[in-house]
Amino acid sequence: MANITILGGGGWGVALSCVLSDNRHNVTIWSFLQSEADVLRTTRENPRSLPGVLIGDSVRVTTDLEQAVTEADVIVMATASSYVRKTARSIAEYVRPGQLIVNVAKGIEEETLKTMTEVISDELPSVNPAVLSGPSHAEEVGKRMPTCVVVGAADRGTAEYIQELFANPVFRVYTSPDVLGIELGGSLKNVIALAAGIADGLGFGDNTKAALITRGIQEISRLGSVMGANIWTFAGLSGIGDLIVTCASMHSRNRRAGILIGQGKTMEEAMEEVQMVVEGVFSAKAAWKLAQKYKVDMPIIEQVNAVLFQNARAKDAIGNLMLRMKTSENTEMLWNA
Image 1 (cartoon, one colour):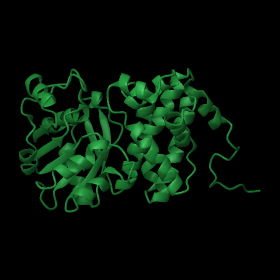
Image 2 (cartoon, rainbow, N blue to C red; image 1 turned 90 degrees about the vertical axis):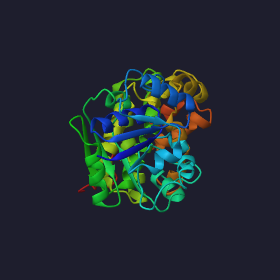
Image 3 (tube, one colour; image 1 turned 30 degrees about the horizontal axis):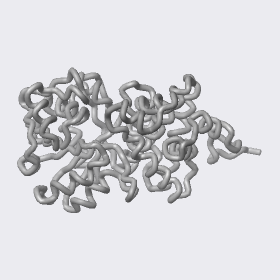
Image 4 (cartoon, rainbow, N blue to C red; image 1 turned 60 degrees about the vertical axis):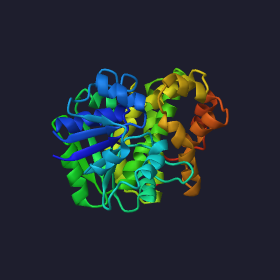
């Protein structure tokens, strides 16, 4: 049994509190918002982010950051990616050297092009950061639907310890040493999901979505490989697995926002209607900057940026993808003659 603090009372934080309290750990949810904490404490649910999923009676809810952090054996960073740096900075005076922090936020910081564990290490150089990711909608995890994820850490012992904390009959956890690959897969799939949603909004069908998923994982894999990630990570849960679920499910806020954009709404209008953080919008610019920095061809990422930030028409963006220069499916395969 461990003392585990979850920083963030949104849908993912609530869902993971269910997993961890089911495993009989002492779980504390910390929320920055007093109003959110009050609702969680009194109703035992977050009706805005995860309606119908109740946190366990033993789960403590607080806004006292110092107490939440200093009493924790493990800290789970479950804020939106755009708040990870600020949250990490705010706990700097309370964490101890070697503190285990499990990041579950998915994103790339636009200004620095760093992943979330890199951001955490920037602000908290003495801690031990890890990442947990995979095809895991909070709506289904909270309802105890069978889910598989992967945890990445710099050393095997840390990964296996986190695996033991989270694993149960409905939440299977694999381990991996490829922290970078796991985080890139979890971040970049949100941008591809926006493209898949845009295609849905335009009225296109399964063929289009399959093409975007398949070519999308190619783009993610190319960039990840150049950056030093293991190519096999993108064939796993945090790669193609997370990409499929995010592109196909209406639980996905990125797909839902993309649908609205495909139907003619602006990025701002789509985000307002979804009423939750659309991580793909924040990751899109960073993804395109990474593509340019590492000189990697990422046409889907490029066209998503054109639609989001350059007022390109969604239908024109699809046409640009279809009419690109003809090429082989896999340029690493060679002809015999």
